[in-house]
Image (tube, rainbow, N blue to C red):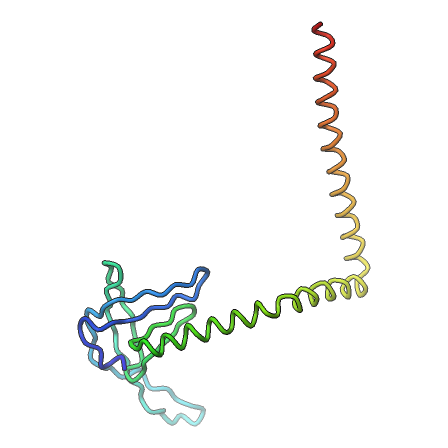
Length: 166
């Protein structure tokens, strides 16, 4: 639990962003548990108050503050950042992330077929898209032909210059 952390305890930080990575730091300080503001449901009955702590952690010679972590929790996440004081909880989080990514990779072929099918269906449903796609393909082919002609013209000019200089 975050409220049970002590100075120099290990603290795990998982960044699930663009380039996932795990950092292990050491706790510098932990605040005393504070009550979170009470929440009310539709009947205006206050819900049980949750307590939170602020944890300061040293990671790679830099101190980082983690605010309002659940005092009785072992793991917390916010967007792409997951923090924990428990190696097993963090290991389970990394394992879940790995399983999810493997499942996605196993279904890549299916999703590529879905994309291709949907593009075809959209062309059927909206002929304007088909016309625009056809025009884009024609323009691309023409650009290729023009660049090929430029290369041939450059070679012809080179040959003419060689002949003229003799």
